[in-house]
Length: 82
Image 1 (tube, rainbow, N blue to C red):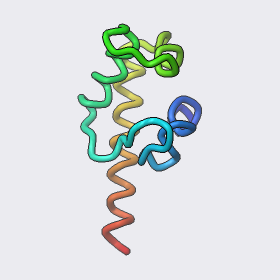
Image 2: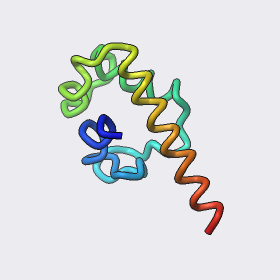
Image 3: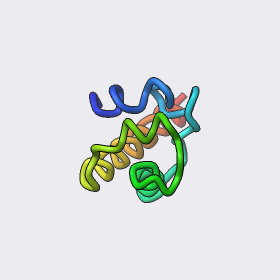
Image 4: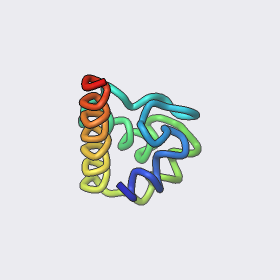
């Protein structure tokens, strides 16, 4: 999605497998959303994430987390068909 590409792909790669940031593969919606919320609420410190997510509300965070999980599922399907 455009949202993932703009906010996440430069550090997590187009396939969520991590480059600068950690891999997002094999993570649940709750794991991803809770981590993003922790960065937004400053209970976890990451300078890059702080600025990227500071203006996101819970609905946007949960939507983005679901997009990432959907991407992971699509990648898994492709890999299993190889």
